[in-house]
Amino acid sequence: MSSNSSRIHLERFVCQSAKTVAPGSRVLDAGAGNGLYRKFFDHCVYESADFGKVDKTYDQLTYVCDLSSIPVENDRFDAVFCTQVLEHLPDPLEVLRELRRVLKPGGLLYASAPLFYEEHEQPYDFFRYTRDGLRSILERAGFDLRELNNLEGYCGTLSYQLGTAAASLPLHPRHYGGGVRGVVAGLAACVLRPLFRGLSGFYGHIDVRHKLDTTGYPKNHTVVAAKPPVPG
Image (cartoon, rainbow, N blue to C red):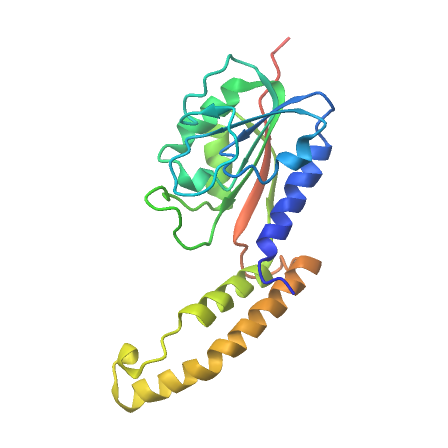
């Protein structure tokens, strides 16, 4: 029973989006990291770009560069994928304009970005994105927004919150100010941590099967946006 429904939903998003890209198309994976999604582009000419500065394992990159300055000509790619990257960019608008530059007219950008998630990959974690924020920055970069969706439902967010509580709730009374209240809070944490761990898995499993979009908020959003075609 997986408690990380976001990974499953994101893989589905990339897989399904990749299937819409015509065979032989040239695709850029912008911020490719470990190349987790390369496998979905066997029918395409796959290229990747990343700055490669985070302490983690990277895939063999086509371009080691800042995403605000990709060393390719204009209009090179039929599609660009940029998943879970926008939060790590100090100037996301500049990067989106660069992704627009390297896309062919009519080409599509497929992206995802977090709304609710802990800080990670410091010191390269700068932003979180609301729906209006994503819409605004894409339009300012010159894209036509085609789709804007929740990656997961609120059960996925709840699963994440419960998992964080299961791992992080302190057990010692001093963390709650000591005294009787601290003792009670510490004992409660001893009981609640395993309960929250189980509930995290339960709600994660539910979110994989059904997105609850009528209440709460997602951890992430996905977008599909187009570079406008050449007029005429």
